[in-house]
Each structure stands twice: as structure tokens, then as C-alpha cells.
View 1 (cartoon, one colour):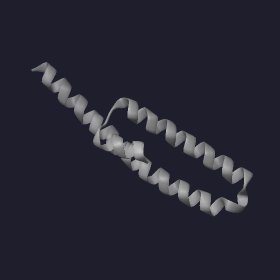
View 2 (view 1 turned 180 degrees about the vertical axis):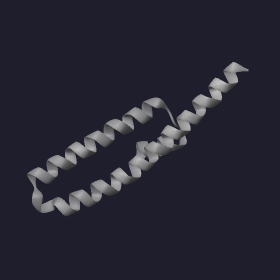
View 3 (view 1 turned 90 degrees about the horizontal axis):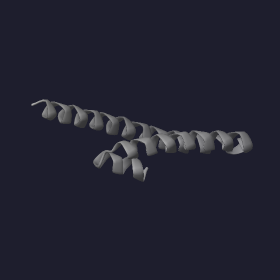
View 4 (view 1 turned 60 degrees about the vertical axis):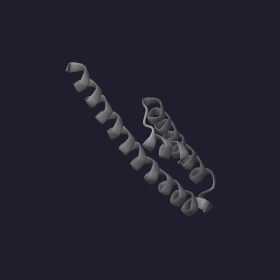
Length: 79
């Protein structure tokens, strides 16, 4: 969550790709936990979904900010 939050305020492509990797690892580890310990499925899924929800929203906003920066840079270069 720290990286996703940091990327919101200081967006970069590297941080965006790192967020993608962390989201993938979270889904993978959550799947493993549910398969290996189904008794803790509700707790695992709830925490994972809360984390993924926040991280996905932060990643989406970061991606939009980066796109807006690219448009501004491209527009400034064409002047």
C-alpha cells in the first residue's frame, strides 16, 4: 500500500510497473493461502480484496496522471 500511495503523489512508470507486480503477487499468494488453508478463506479473501481494491484504485489514478503528463510534454514539444 505504501508504494501505491507514494506513486499517487510521485507518479512514474517504474512505480506503476512495481504496483502491477505487487498486485500479481498478492493474487498469487492469496490463491495459495486459500488452497492450502481453506479454513481461513474468509479472513484471507477479505484482507486481500481490501488491499486489492485500494491498490487498483491508486494504480488507476497513477496511470491517468502519467498519461496526462505525457500529453502535456508532447503538447509542449510541439510548440
